[in-house]
Length: 382
Image 1 (tube, rainbow, N blue to C red):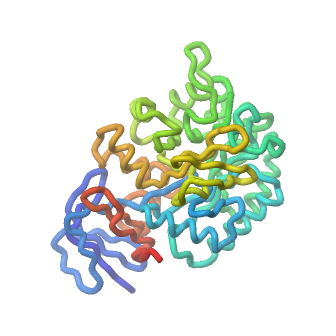
Image 2: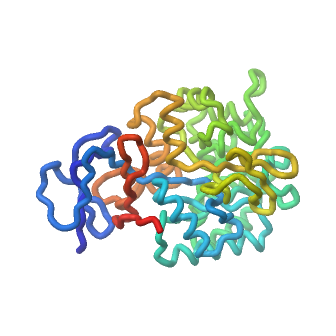
Image 3: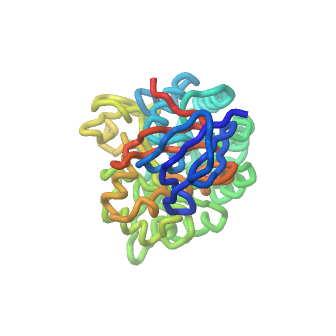
């Protein structure tokens, strides 16, 4: 059994920072008293904060790699980039594409997960479509959108051998209200978005099992006092709400309102990043779409529609701190515990607890990422 230790740091335990020592044994966590004797490999976290590794459940790529065209070696590039920014687990978000290309993406994800990657752990797949409304398609190719089809979804999940974990659908699309419970039976968590659904239809989707809202406020019918619509439904209900905290998709005041309305345990900070994340302004693509990035802002070349982001989760955390003036202890669950609970991996991810995966991010006094541990192995940027 291999053992290493983190000592002298302030560790985020039970939603507060406290002095503790951590033993890592074969990729799992053991919590020790601060003065416990240690020997062997030690990381001295004196003056630093030890927090759970971040989870990004909605991202389309980074560093020149688009998930819809990513082979295993490309997925590893994304995973290494994420690890360098404190993200230790992620879902690959496959944009609506042809059935042939979607199946190819599933195979690439399976192939990558079957080998030992060098970066953040790829937990599975997020299918963003194709069961989406054309009126709120965003960057989705309209001709590839489809009505709810449980047989197709089951086929994808069987091919994926169960690693489709998350699905975005539009409640008003024909067949979707029946698709949601079918997805749950397949082990898939459903989010609603890209939608102009009225309040009643959105509430029916939540009653059927939809657990979250995709990039809340973006690509959905907004709130009206007489027509609450999908936004009113997700704000009123217990659904989790994804939020892109880059300062472009949501005004800081809206982020504060969302947190006040939903509470700190129902908001999930995602990136919705595209292949331009980590790279300069320029021309890129998102699935079949051409994208132009100017001053870090990604938009479709065709009509200027915003198309994902160039955000990283460590930057999202700093933005949240600046906008809300809440303590770090309050905001960390948005990037750790909440996404882990939403997609059903909190038994091993999302918090620092006995027996969980040793996925840790170490922050310095300025909240920069100082070190990252992936299943107990210290990540080395190459």
